Length: 393
Image (cartoon, rainbow, N blue to C red; front, side, top):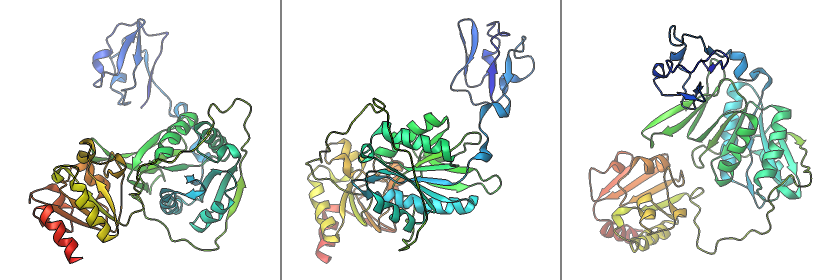
């Protein structure tokens, strides 16, 4: 129940202020104003709240779009240097399920420069259609260029759902598109479903520091947009030789339309780690006691053929680079094996790794929350346990 203030009727008497349980009504320039904290509860429309009838209910038709004009599920196919990102493949699998539940087609939208090979790859991962924008300006990610191309495509083809990976690029592009389209965006989703009754997208994400899960709907605007964390969804099987419909998009830009140009890409000189695609991760936390503890963690990771991860506490202490951080404020991972060493198991960390196939926890505190999600728990000093595991390996 959306509301508005009729400025011609409002006298600024302030009698409506006490009616709002969320303090969303304020007086500005002697007129009542509905603020952003309004939840549309309708309390201010109750009889006798406004003696001048200045608070009015908005008609449903005036605050949305004709949702029947929108069809299909789109996945933004993020690529870097011509390589399709893993989260985009995961979204193709999830998008297939959503499209089947809605009864529509699964489409991918790809931006790049001479990356036709990725078009075939997207078909093989299940795309019924691929919308391809091909231009030199799209070779590397550029906020203006990508936003303009995809926004024009959304206006023309009207997708019902648009999914992006919650990567550095997706977290930049998603809000830009949502603002341009006048729609909502649910960030960092961990689960997506279709309401069987009205076919709306049910977007679930952690809220209040991961202490509860919120399911969010976008009933009156389109497209319904979500960013999804890498490592949360299952990758689909690749079907070699599968084909679909290719639609080439307008990728021309007027002079001065792009405010930024990518002049050069410089790779970081420090050692980086790819947690998203790792099948085995050995992580250390505050229980290591200091940065030297990661030498032991590295030894176990090397013995297992895995990579090194960490909790936020270790990163905040300066013991290891942020690129190794697993958790809600780091990287969401889904390896075959996750070994947590000296990690107590804060809810933010658990949110980023609890979907791992197998979890092994090593901690001196037998009551540590990490043991609640672990498949195997070892209560003991990690500096004695890890060398024993390495010796056994």
